[in-house]
Image (cartoon, rainbow, N blue to C red):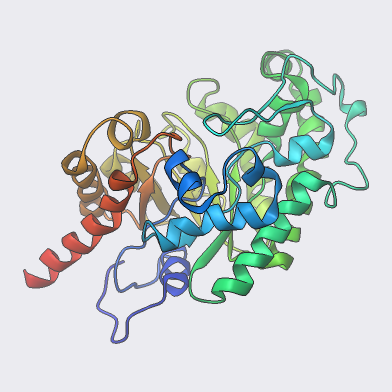
Length: 348
């Protein structure tokens, strides 16, 4: 809902209002996954992999979302593997120009009985650095900007800890066993989410990769909708669910969970997505990453921003963690285009 507000809002106020579908002075710019690029790493001397494992460098790189790009959010968790590392998965941390990954050909669990959340899960270096980075950012920026944390959902953890193929085959062959696994793994999601609230997070991204190219909307309903609904009580700040791919087939289910927002992919059109969720949940997105932000220019970026704004999407930004070689200029176009759209609208 766009409405003239007498006094300008802070970035934090703007984001939190949009997540609850309340009036805002302008549409907030948000990427609840990652805006890290090699160019930004060089700018603030916070390269991968150090900025994934050192709290000060993690905070420094994350802050560029606000200080350099003009977004309304700061999100310091650039990877999807911090929890998996703390759970005991074997990691490949890569270099500055590549994402760290879990070695999924070396799974750590095979049965529900194998699942155990270590007693040092929250004090492991790769989870502790996230909590420390959030604390650093909260101290530096206070209530000026929205600080978003990230806690991985149990479906994603299943891929990392069991291996993608084994976990998906389990969901086909033994749904009850899959549910037992999800129930046990969800504790890691909840513990890490709550710890980030205590550290100072204003909202939480919850990626749970039941992606459109791997599972159906019916699968989401069967395995995850009820659990995601419960997360709203278990993690009591605004939750932004993230699932990649063509997901309009599950957006109605997602809108029933009570989560604050859904971070959606460019494979879903803004108008059809807004019509599906019908103001029950905010949408965040969905500027295309590999084609538009990475490979095209300012005009194409602005056109996708306008498409989202015309459809009424509540928070605008990239569809997912951006490619590490994305030009800064294309990212800066997003807030510029948002301001231009609002200026044109007020004149008319």
